[in-house]
Amino acid sequence: MPRPSPVTDVVKSLFGGEARHAWSLDELHEAARVALGGADYSTVFRAVSAMEREGAIRRIDLGDGKAHYEVGDDHHEHVRCDSCGQVAEVPGCVLEDAAAGVQNSTGFKVTSHHLVFTGLCPACAETPSEL
Amino acid sequence: MPRPSPVTDVVKSLFGGEARHAWSLDELHEAARVALGGADYSTVFRAVSAMEREGAIRRIDLGDGKAHYEVGDDHHEHVRCDSCGQVAEVPGCVLEDAAAGVQNSTGFKVTSHHLVFTGLCPACAETPSEL
DNA sequence: ATAAATGCAAACGCTTTGCGAGTGC
DNA sequence: GCACTCGCAAAGCGTTTGCATTTAT
Image (tube, rainbow over all chains, first blue to last red; front, side):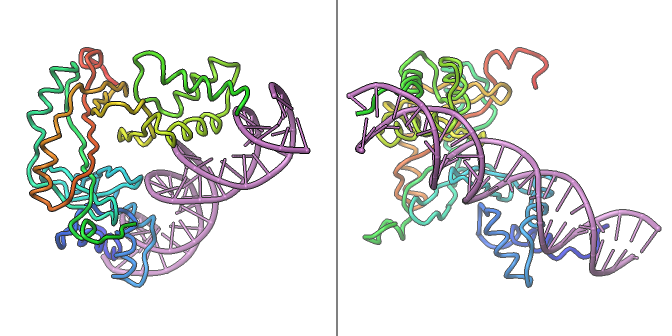
């Protein structure tokens, strides 16, 4: 077994922790950097890659050009704030049956889907001046 | 006014033409290169950017890491084949009301969404050996 | 001359990899 | 000594931009 792996451990704990979902590599890197005295981007990347390979986390694309990762237990969709970038998750999956419809209308055998709602989070929706 | 602009013209015509949807820059570049004797990637990019700026086309993200563009009249979703990458469009928009649900459950003011189904196109679903 | 389109090459942002050094066991 | 993690630096990949050239008016 591996012995000390501060960076990797921190990354793992980050996913274990709080309600934070959909980490980007930047965010993970920054968090790791803060938690320890410093951590390299590539090390964080490798930790994340390993976790993804093991199936512990899943990579998702939120349409902002960056890769995001989240713990891969349940399947759900996301809402991303156009203004601040905050991401929240949508409780249920509204698409289970929609997939069937798609299959009928296009002939594609739908195996998965990828949905992101965008809009404004409660906070940004209130502030008169957005970005 | 601009005078001769072979590349740009070809790009525009490509969008006007056939049933081809969701062009990637590569595809546009290749098509333009074939149509004329040659065309530069950046020129194609600029033509596309201009069209996007004018609202003639819309950029969409199909989750394959590349930018895709399509004529921006109606709003619809996509199905992309995991095997060959072919993209088909899904007739209706199944999400109009779903967005309302999301808004209720998350508090986000949903202004847009971005959905891509993935799976296997009819052809790839039949062939026993896929990529 | 002027304005515009083009090609070329290089910059960029983010992801990914090669490699050498440090370190528990 | 070995296996493993880490950091550094550089490579990749796709997108974007700067600049000099050509060309139709």
